[in-house]
Structure formats: C-alpha cells, structure tokens
Image (cartoon, rainbow over all chains, first blue to last red; front, side, top):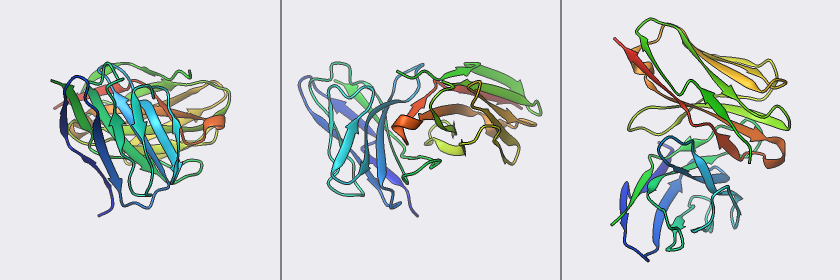
Length: 113
Length: 113
C-alpha cells in the first residue's frame, strides 16, 4: 500500500542536541511538507519542497533545517537553535497543481528531556 | 500572515443530529480550500478540495459549500454518528503560494450515542 511513513513515533531531545525526524513516501508525489502542531493551534508550516533539490521556508522555519535529495524522502532536523521544540510534527505530501489534497503521515511527538 | 478562522471551536451533539461548521478565509487571492478530518490516533484525511466559487462537494453524509467572494466555507454532517467524532480542519491556499496551505485551528466534534 502506498503511504507516508514517519519515524520515530516518539523522540526525546536533550538540551543542545540536534535531532532528525524521518519522512518517507511511496506515493510518487513531487511536493512534501513539514508541519508543527501545538495545543489549541492549527498546523503551522515549517518547510516545504515542490521538487527534488529545492525547498522553501514556511511560516516558522527558524531553528529547523531540511533536505530533499530524493523524491521519496524529506527529513527534518530540529536544531539546538529551536528553543521550544516540544510539539507534534506531521509530514505530508501531494501532487503538484491546483486542487491536490495532501496526504499525511502518523506524526512524531518530540519532547525535551 | 494569512488568517483562517474556524467556528465553533468544539461541538457536542447527539447521534442523529445534523450539524455544520464554518471556515472563514481571505476573500482575495483565492486558489483552493481544503477540508480534512483528523480522528484521534490517526493521520489527517482529506475530505474535499474546492477551487471554484459556488462549489458544492458531497461524500456520503458529509457535504461542503464554498463562497470565495465573501470568504467562507461550510461543512455539513447529516445524521451525525459516533464515528464522525474527529477534529475537522480547513486550510486555505492563496494564488501566490500555490500548494502552500494555511490551516485553521479546527473544530472538534463529539457525537454521543
């Protein structure tokens, strides 16, 4: 079955540590996205990529980095510069073009030790 | 920053009741309006993507309408069932940003049997 796989499901970060969240899709989608969810708020876009080797900052990119070396993969690194990383992170993908729905993974919950 | 508002924030209804939610978005620069259903412990699932003023979409007991001139969309659920309990998210795409979505905070629906 096609889908999006996020790992790990739970992740703990120590102070000053960088951590990387994995997102893999086998839907042959060109576009991929990373969102952050905090309690009582909507999903906020961190980074997105419309095509391999290209990505753009979303609304809350500070303290995060991404790469898009392969069509199937869009890992997100939460750096030590992100002072409030505790949140639920969702990865999504879609075909490009108007009216294309996004397909989501199951999410990663990141907490600070 | 674009703003998407959803109301009500939460809703408790009895099984069999019909209900509706509102999504308000900027009326200028419209590209698309998405609705997603997010059940607990699952990933968000696309319900509808609407692109034209006056669009009406239906999937089973759930339907949605779109008014791009005044900047709102309604989601209707006819004869609510306990399995309809979920958070319903709407997301707006602006013409200048293409597939980049701005999400509302969601409406939490609880259906009691």
